[in-house]
Length: 297
Image 1 (cartoon, rainbow, N blue to C red):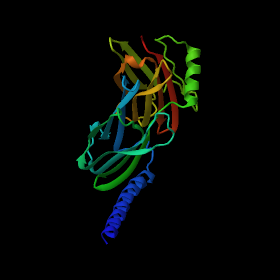
Image 2: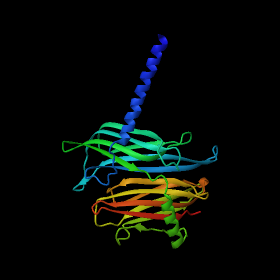
Image 3: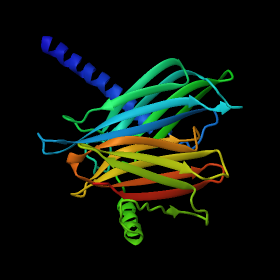
């Protein structure tokens, strides 16, 4: 009898756990979309990856800082504040940078009854258990002039450059020179418009670290409705592509984005490469810009 009761308890526990997993899985399968622009509330994700050489495992350890901001847009130059009834954020992760499919779900945060602007920071430490963010999901319920609005927002992270990206970057870099001051920019374009996005990288060497400053300048005067996804990588001497910094759904806070980050010299960095995807929402156009720059030694 006692054994039968224990078995029943175990079965019930398994059912509860299974329901919880299924609920989270269903969340991922909902109609999350890559929203290009919102006229009221928008979410921006900034990712900084710190790569340091780990002597114990004789390899590179990559830690992440994830910064999410949720803001109201300006109307007549005044930033609007919105009541957020419910906010849920989670991410799917990879166990290796070279994996093709996500393996785990990383619960980010859940908030109730906040007012925009909302900011949230989450560190991901990878010394013992590696988790590389691959996709971010945000479920947002907010109010606009008394109307309840629910949106499902998704951003796919550019974890690694594709083989096609690398081939194109290397071809352009070889064609345009390889000095540390050269910048290579190219657009995959549907028309003859050039220079919609300009990338600038400034780097400097100190005793133990390099410092990189990345600037994105948008020169598209045809619209104030744009969306930028950018990811950069450090290419090491042994050919690894390590995530550096990225920004996703950079959409109209300012025409320019700029950030700086240190790079550990012990990982033996050689180049920095950047991929930027720019969406002109009004014109329904997409432009891809690449840059490769040698790191000052």
